[in-house]
Image (cartoon, rainbow, N blue to C red; front, side):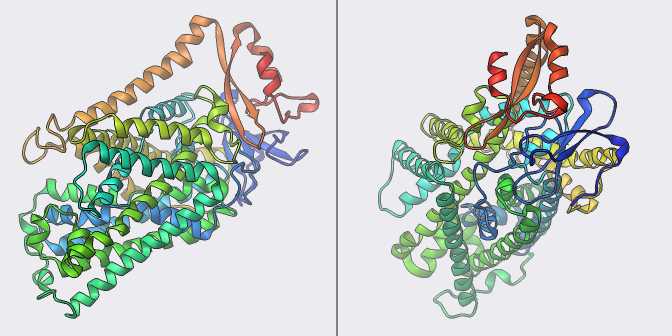
Length: 587
């Protein structure tokens, strides 16, 4: 547990509802103004006190989603997010960019090191806020508390506008059709994709425990799939199959590397970064983990290491069974070509069920994590209809966020035509995400400075500075690369129009979020003669949320005198009221 804050930096007030009634906790400040107050709250997951800016969403003393995330669940939430369908197709693009088998394999090691650095960043951030789910939603909110609500608003609007996961569902549908002899139409692929997506959403809505068990099961199957491919690859290398000269790709393994340009090498690093993406998924559910920092410190690195080893051995298996020339020339997914070479076309179709299950596990794990992120955005109070986003009724699950994401993703599955539009949508989502992760990483240094000024001691984990800097540099690459023209010219990107259109559109969406923030926080209150103030909602089922309310200018002084820093009503003696919803409705 963190050491107690210096007495020079704190005021006292009685605990909010998330702490045992009558227990005193700290309100700290970096100056003499109300806007700089920080509050300490205790969650129900056995973690240390969460000290955070008072504008942050209140800690839920008892998670309304339960505490079903076990050691194994942390492992498989991580595994399922990292291993999607990329490993079954990425080896071909990596070989194309790197120019040689040896360099392509080496890049997977680089990816592992950078991802481990990123994981350490998330560990430290989570150790500061161990009772807040939502990952970067929380870390951005706390790293940049001023201007007040700016990052919650911009992240919330970006999450709403780009809240869809259509690409994973489309990929899964295509894999399903590869198991058949049918040639599907575009609408048939979309229909199957919608069915897969709906099934994953229903699993999460119906029961949290069931969805996590299903995720664990699919993650285990996914690991077995890569183990099966890896073992088969070593059998091939041993010369026990019909593959002739299985070690041919490993002779002069780095031949061709010298002809590779800087653009291709940088692009390969981008591909590797995305292949390891999802390592942070467990941090989205951290308030549902008992003793979260200790649990995730033991399990998340293990999951990453297992995945990295299997990535390497799977690539070795592909290179053992398929010649370098055939990998580069083939239009098939590398895994399908691998199965076909070893077991024949008929068997290869049947074995495609393994990538199908892998894709579904990725969709499910992604949805589990993102539903918590969207719910945490709702708990910040910056979205309208707070109850819709935050409530866990009637099933004890995040129904509102899942339903909203189902609608958005269903639209994006059915509406855009295949081809350019699909590629554009995928690229459009990536750039704003890269911007926020870059800012979150920079924000780690800001949070360290905040805690130092508040007199707080070290948390349960501190990342090495060199690891943070390496991860930050990898994020800079993701911000720069989309602006670099492709080798074939400005119209030779992933779509037929200007290569940076998606990047520019992504920045435009962020700019619109900033405009929305200015209008909501400054322009409308000025025109309407009111101030925005936050209050705390406690809903049936144990859900707790902030709600932004309008207070007339003439009532602001009275409001501030009767509410604490987090927005709870102060009772006689300075104690904070556990519930304020009735009062808010009257206001």
